[in-house]
Image (cartoon, rainbow, N blue to C red; front, side, top):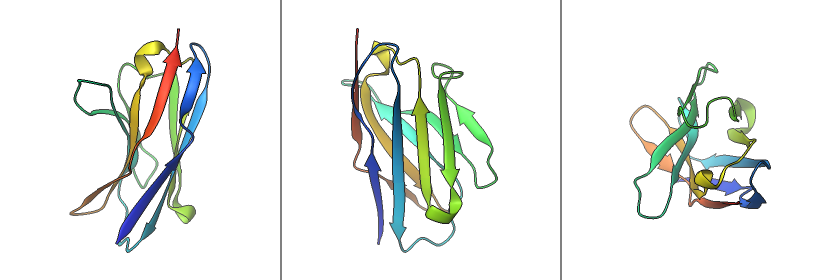
Length: 115
């Protein structure tokens, strides 16, 4: 069984910063990509940022230049540094770990940005 434990969400004013962390544990075979998705109320879950096992990153246009995704392969941990936060970044952020045939999801952490 695989578990993803997220931390670092909270309430911040516009222009502020937060750092999310996600630790994966359990019966992991070989992790390919790790990343973050988010879901605002009444909207679908969207990609925020992903990072491959080789370090290649991919960002949503809306966060490019403000957010940075990174990972520590030895610790099975993925991070999301979020700077210059905007009210429209408010959402539940979900950690994602992708193996060859399986996707794993965290329970989600709330990020609220006040104007």
